[in-house]
Image 1 (cartoon, rainbow, N blue to C red):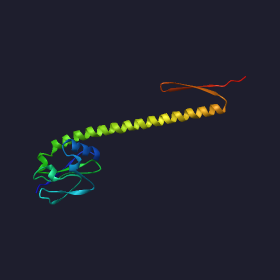
Image 2 (cartoon, helix red, strand yellow):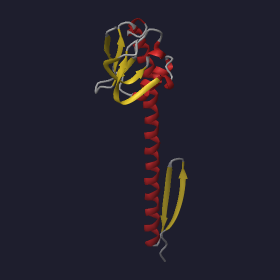
Image 3 (tube, one colour):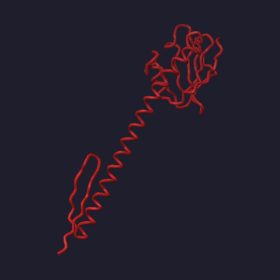
Image 4 (tube, rainbow, N blue to C red):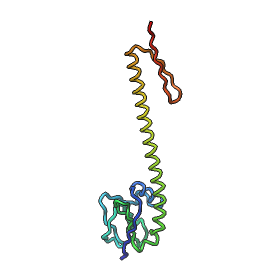
Length: 164
């Protein structure tokens, strides 16, 4: 029976961790995700005391292997790897996963930032249009004629009132 080793990681995003695991050969169909941690299984199929939220079952890890897991903690996922499997799934493997994780996390942050910029720009345009309409309405109530021109992002309103 192999002892399990717990290795702390700075990875906190489940989606990015799953993508990183897929990048190193564990596609989504080979990885279990549990809201409540599930017990890991040993090489003989026996239930172990170790639990994990993300589990790669032993049949996907390799012959005579134990399950590999990642337990969600407030500070990041803890990788749980048996001593037997540590030669293949140890520090080097985790470094590789962490590199892929960072790439996915960066891409996700960029996507979120781009979406935030689009929302802010849409809100800015909505505000400008609301202000333009308010000026038009008030000017008409006060008897002004409005001449509007646009130059790129700039709107120029000229209010004209003829008095005789």
